[in-house]
Image 1 (cartoon, rainbow, N blue to C red):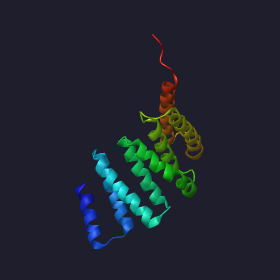
Image 2: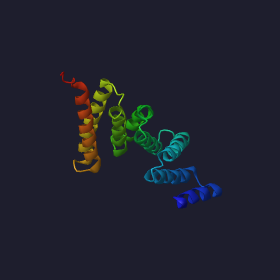
Image 3: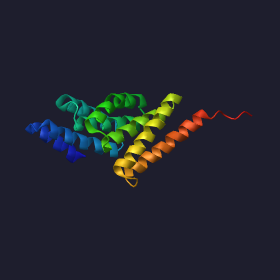
Image 4: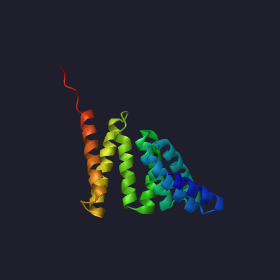
Length: 174
């Protein structure tokens, strides 16, 4: 991590391109996340996302940065923030990227932000299941059933379905 921090400092001093700075910052955020420093990772990911948004607008790099940011928000159980970011970003991802892996991962993150939230409504849970069913179908067609992301999508779908069933099933009376 010290090497990444020193690299970032040096690149800033020599006036490296914003693209290069954002790439190093993204790598640093990954390191923070691995070390469990999720708030630090999120802070950097937000900076990278906002920087790419300003620099490139609706570009793949911007969308990937938004996805990283939402994944960290999800990890920190800041579900509403993750949902807001994905609601804003997913339509752009569908238009710019189509049904590629990044878009599918963003849809999974959005669905997880819905069903993992203890305050989710039944409508939220149904939306999560529907989103994951659709994403799973697309992922299988685009990536093939053995792809790790397809397997992860299936697990998320099973979890969302279980949460929905548990909420829909009234408790038994004694």
